[in-house]
Image (cartoon, rainbow, N blue to C red; front, side, top):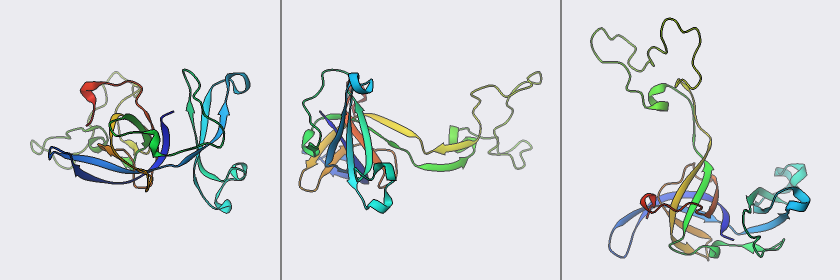
Length: 209
């Protein structure tokens, strides 16, 4: 089962054997422990629950204190149930250089932003009577409309949402330091929790190598 939890460390660049530069993200991954195996008969769905990053009991919610883990995440099982048992530990060795993965995380929260930064609007012209409305959204409808249409692009909260980046390639594995070197950028700040799983829909054209 190719799944692991980790935290984003930083971005850097490495050179491959042919001297080409590769932008990469350094990830501190695992080890994770299987805390529960959910079955269709008992729980109504099949999944494996993992615990990652232990912390002091006073900093854990009371319902989770008996487990002692900072993060608990589940991975749904669609096909055949993997040969895995409760208490089993998984580390970065579940992956290998060259594997293609999907990474899910929470993007950076940027607060309340206008339409230029949030949606890429060009803003108004710099001349022809322009005064102080260069970054305004402009008109939002005709004179007959008495409401704002659903889905209208306007100012609002930006970032701070779950994002999944697909088809990233694992370039290197450091088992001693529990590190993964993944090609490309991963959303989130340093320390953001990452869910790293085997790619479900591999698209060669979009593969980041």
